[in-house]
View 1: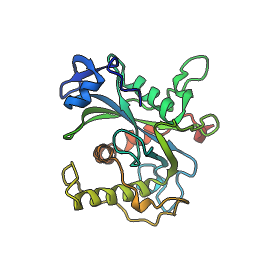
View 2: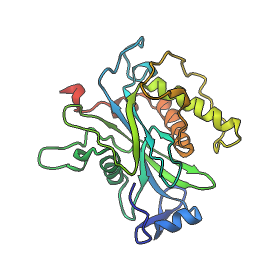
View 3: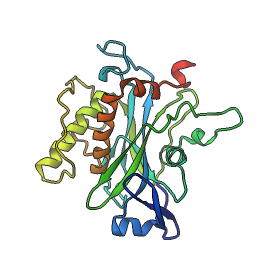
View 4: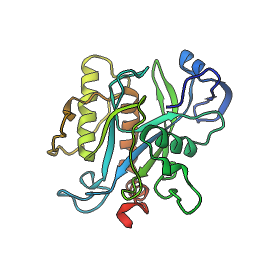
Amino acid sequence: SKGTSTSELVEMVDGSGTPLAMVPRELVHRFNLLHRGIGVMVFDTRNAGDGDGDGDVRSDLRIPRVYVHRRTDHKRVFPSLYDMFVGGVSGAGEPPELTARRELAEELGLVRVLRTTNGDDTHQQLSEMLFRCTVCTSYNRCVVSMFAYTMDNQRDVISWQEEEVAWGTFVPYPMVQQAARLSIDRLKSRNAWPGDDFSDGDLQTVDCLDIKGTDWKEWDFVPDGLLVWEAWEQWRRQNGQRFANAIVSDGASSK
């Protein structure tokens, strides 16, 4: 969510994310250079465990709610589309964790994530880097480092960045799963899906409550975000305990 001034330098990288050169961000987009970025899924542990699951956070029905937001109408890329991640490009020399903290503060106003001293340490709310995935499309090539952030509902307050976010709310994880599947199906029907066929056959169809003012079945997600979502779901299913550990924090659920 940082500006796109030609004076802002980012790193062109190889397939493993190793920097090769520093280039102006404008050129990264113009020539579709492989670069570094981050994605953060934001969780709210309130009401986690409601439903008919077995009590294990690794169950789809027991995963805490996820923050979904809609991009503003005047965004340069994919205006008005939805996303289940906070994301952004890493500056030259900027560690992925720092990018994640900066983007959480800029896009959602979670400024506490920047305060890691003076007794206000949020290091346990932001997970370690969980995995990397690579997005490669005709318009974006990025090695993405993935994180999870668990809200402290007594101290964190979401405040949208006016230029970035038009709407957002926490929704049940199964709702995101179903909405993402529907969004991918619509892209496939238009021959506009940039990814491969992805099997989510173990996805449980569950009844999701309606959200006032929006129809989640019609949410069209950013295609790049859907590619990252597929990588996220594959990683989550293969790393259930690590995922569970990533969203257990010293936030409101443990205070």
